[in-house]
Length: 227
Length: 227
Image (cartoon, rainbow over all chains, first blue to last red; front, side):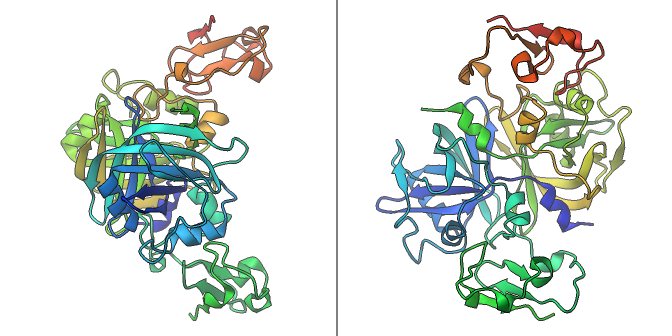
């Protein structure tokens, strides 16, 4: 039997993986970045084949990894995690430097970054694993802790977007009993659930300028969950 | 430039990856286990080619992943992280169940486990990435937190063994200045460093039955670091 809650015990960080083509840059939020060999130092990044950034990495053969910290803004998650670079320029207005290879590196809300040159692309079905050799690594901020997926889920109450390797359909998770007097509202952009029972505040009583703590969408983008 | 300290900002959990051949079981401590696709649910585990367990996974095509908790015993790290199954039966005296595929699953100090059937082996140089389809996943203990590599390094003061993808030669890390009156002692089994300046206790004053907090080796296995 597969108890899907067990998968939440696997630990991940949260990163902004970026790449470029000849003219543009793009990036996406990833939780699957990891070192695969020490000599030479090589890193893997898992990327949905539908991600616009996947095309960029294949074309340019380079990618960067910005390590997000625990206070990373919901706007950044909304922009890079739940929207596509096919629709708008994700890097516009973002604090970016360019690595040796010309790859864009996002600095916003990041404590460190890596720059990698692709050496291998592994097709694993819905996703590619891009394996890159480490060309450059810098610390940007020693004062903050790296954001982990567990922190994002438990403290920030975020959920994985559908393109993530760790996306889990909510129907597979056993629902926890809630008092019937409380309602739940779901963000239509990112799936984040505002649960009145947990927040101890009615959704209707939230201010009009309240935004989704996971992706930064507006209050009006939430829908009541009718069970 | 590569600042190797930046690599410590990448987040990992700590796991016991196990497999079997026809007659025996074996396992090793891994920090590189991660989900690579959601549909179907597939996991990757990175394993040094010299690891005895790598042979077992290649032969049997199955592996299990036990998710270690924060209080996992130093003995377990010593047994599975710093010694080879070529020399002794690692599973002797260990609490093991066998999955549907016959794969051994270590239960000691674990909060959840996964059972995977290998579908792909990727050669990435010194290591293999084994990719397996999830057959089984269970939670064993809801009360404890998963051990992360950061916790292991910072709180437990452990270091990665030489076979780990994240092993970093100490000479690459900029040494932090220490007061000359304090000495450092290194565990010859696992490389753990007892730093008198940090511990605020002389190594000589530790009790005779003190053991390495990282791998469980005895006090007499430590050597003074002469700089």
